[in-house]
Amino acid sequence: MELLKQRIREVGTVLSNEVIKLDAILNHAVDPALTTAMGREFTRLFREDNVTKILTIESSGIPIAFAAAQDLNVPMVFARRKKSLNSDTSETYSERVPSFTKGYVTDIMVSREFLTAEDRILVIDDFIANGDAARGLIRIIRRSGAHLVGVGIAVEKSFQAGGRTIRESGVRVESLAKITSLAPGRIEFE
Ligand code: G4P
Ligand code: NA
Ligand code: NA
Image (cartoon, rainbow, N blue to C red; front, side, top):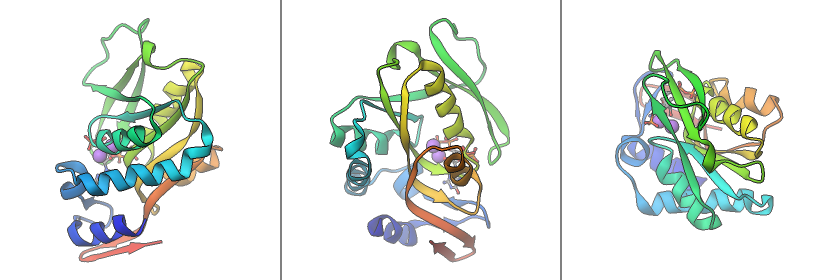
């Protein structure tokens, strides 16, 4: 998606060879026009797939997931993060998700009432790095009996293994911008 790449070049700050700061459009501020355009692009990619619901994870996935849900005219659900797992697992699906960039483990959960075996789920998130968050969401979908249509990501860092390994497991992963390498002052796209 050309507009997204252009905005990444404009506002992105490379923090290391692995991490790019995109607070101005994804992780702290929201650009409504860009977010709406990303939602439209996810709709274009998945419009034939009879999506019934979009699943994302708090917090930065929420605006783009909302934009896609609005465009596809389906509900959107966001998994919640818990510092520790003491929610009632008879009422929720919970999964433990490690974060390599942040160096700790969180538990993510979705209430069972929001995922049913009749659902056809599109997962949306802002970044994919190692893919742990996406894999956690996929495990929750599998446990609910819902059908996973695919995964839509705004920014894939394709030098990290998340997108590739999830595709290799047979899941359709679509990314709006793929970053192949990062270096100070330099962002390379596929
Ligand atoms: P993974 O899920 O793909 O394995 O990613 P990882 O654990 O490494 O990432 C943890 C958090 O950092 C996620 O946000 C992810 O979106 C974000 N992240 C990963 N790489 C980058 C990057 O290069 N730049 C930025 N800006 N973020 C990155 P989160 O914990 O879900 O937080 P939130 O932003 O959704 O609240
Ligand atoms: Na995220
Ligand atoms: Na994030």
